[in-house]
Image (cartoon, rainbow, N blue to C red; front, side):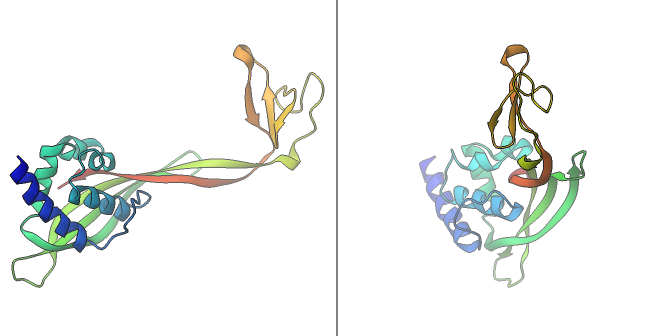
Length: 194
């Protein structure tokens, strides 16, 4: 097993050197997560590599043997790089904001003495986006004793926030007019590799 790992490590190191991608783990874009996975694959990082996978990709390649299988699929090719990225589908929330996008990302390389780049693999990538809402606390009425201006709020717990009494001790929530829905994070994972 050690002999196979050393051979795979050398190949994967060449793959990482030839794939022109960011040095840090960027999981906010489809190309970034493919690059981060390639980097972990090159280091034979059995703990980190599966973190970039989900679904079918994790089932097929999320362990040591799966990593070796993937490295063997890449072995006949050199000069690997990210090719075309295509958006396949977008799922929106009830306010029309995209929350899930699915992509395909091509990995291309050269085979033998050929100078032409050909498709080596295609990665399916799912990117989810979370949003947060910012509120204008200037539109909150001042809290009053016993009852507040919004849903029975009894006191302000911070700028633009009220405490709403209720069963189990109540809860904190924002008040005011929503200003904007800002993107909190986009996180991509590889869902399949073919």
